[in-house]
Image 1 (cartoon, rainbow, N blue to C red):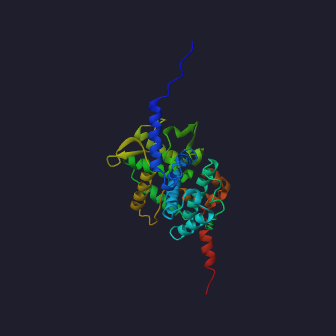
Image 2 (spheres, rainbow, N blue to C red):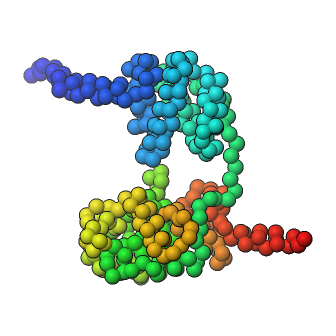
Image 3 (cartoon, rainbow, N blue to C red):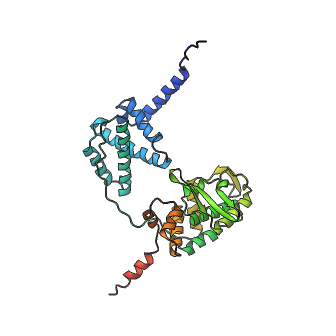
Length: 332
């Protein structure tokens, strides 16, 4: 039996047109003027090439600003040369910090690479442009002393589920060196127990699953939290959830990292801490405390899931007091 060829779906064609129209309207003017192929390739750069949402948002802002700057000066996409990119980077240097300028240049360079591979442009005008030199050997994240960390944890009232949750969440960040983004993504099933050993499974940046043994304090605080809220058997649901009703009622929604930051600021203020701390403080605090007690940089790197030991060393504040002692030798 011979079948007639399938008739193209008008609905699919219309949907495609709607999507194309929305992309066209959302693209920077300079990209739109370069044609539909350039618009499609531009948005594929974000959707197909960049998986991390925060990076995607940052690069979208950086590129939007760059192409608007070029458009205001009458440039077309094909007119952009290394001198144009260099002038823009010089201009950014008068407005923003060096790390922000370097991030903007990275976004521009990667986007043009993508356009070149997609045969939109013959060459990348940003490839030869150098950004500002920026070397950092010591991180700026505020670090708590062991006494301050204990003061914070012990100040949290645990007569409500909100307090139990906050104490457990802060402990996980301190004792596992975990990023807040990885902690708030945890499911109940990511708190693992094999025999008497407990561990934490963290979903870190770049799609990496990272398993860390659970410190006995983490086990104590997590067990108290899970027992109080009764979700220990709901392994596919969020571990750290939002609460309502003045911290008495647990919801089904995962706690966001922004809510976690606000919680940390509130708890630190009530604990009387003078530092302006955030969630990343606990990562730096845990690493510093570990190194002060004889831990190695290599093991700290493994626990923190850092790609390079140089990154781990940025969190190391163990030499601060030594440097001060040496300076005090200058007796005049």
